Every structure is written in structure tokens, then in C-alpha cells.
Amino acid sequence: HHGSVDPGLDEQLRVLRPRVAVISAGRSNDYGHPRPETLAALAAVPGLALYRTDMQRRVVVESDGRRIRVRTEG
Image (cartoon, rainbow, N blue to C red):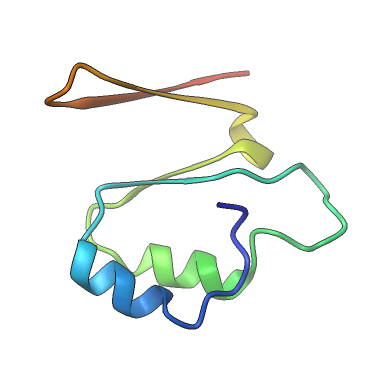
């Protein structure tokens, strides 16, 4: 999502234990996304790879049905 504050994020991350997260937000957007609280919660997840469109521009996620591959362009 855009990286806004989500009161249930810590619990979701604890249960799901994601390996990859993508934040889609424009550079210098008017909403202040991604929020520092969201970035801190994601940083606390061991081994999580974080991709951000405000920093890496284009993030492409592909899957063969068993594995995912993430690449950035820009």
C-alpha cells in the first residue's frame, strides 16, 4: 500500500511474517507516505526486503506460481 499508519500492522506482520513488502508512494507526496511508524514496523521484521516506489521508482513483482521475483527499474 502507500505506507500510511495502520494500527493493526504489527499484528499482521507478526502473523504473516512476510519476506517482501512493497510501498507504492510518490516521491515527496503531500501525505507524508510512507509514514515513519510504518517503516519502523517493517524494519523490525527479520529478513524482510522492502521496496519503495518513491525511492526505486518502478517495482516489478513476478511469480511462476511457486516463487516470486522482485526487480526494480529506475
